[in-house]
Image (cartoon, rainbow, N blue to C red; front, side, top):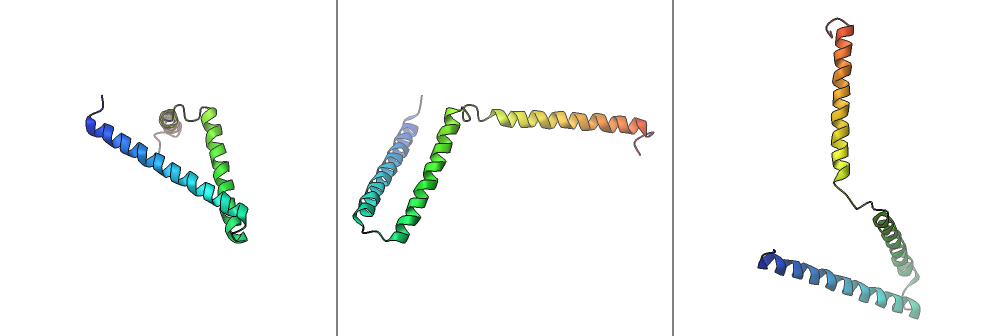
Length: 107
């Protein structure tokens, strides 16, 4: 079970993230309201709008990866890489040993 201090820290982090998300939603609402009223200059609208498009694309890619199961086992590729490296080392050692006997001692 979590000690009391870990529970407090977890709640504080959760509340901070929730507050940040609420602030972001408020700013997004204000941006849409300002953009629709015509008070926002065109260059600022284009810049901010392009950021939203890029962010939406990133979120779509992250959602696609999550739904496809790419985040299911994030440790497995590391172990696969280490196994492949060990296999390549064994193959290189076998090739060196074969080359050493074929050339009379490896020199």
